Image (cartoon, rainbow, N blue to C red; front, top):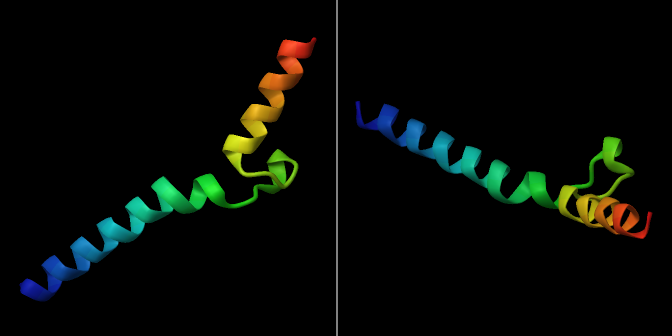
Amino acid sequence: MIEKAYREQAALIVSEYIQAWYNRKRQHAALEYLPPEEFARKVNKQNIAA
């Protein structure tokens, strides 16, 4: 029973890490190999300049 709780807690921690840190920092092929935040800044700059 305790082991299951530890596994669930570990899964939650890993999931939070992936969502909050890793996905925001890793390069995405669909976004010209830029992290999402950097791609959004680039697009916003282009939209402002247009």
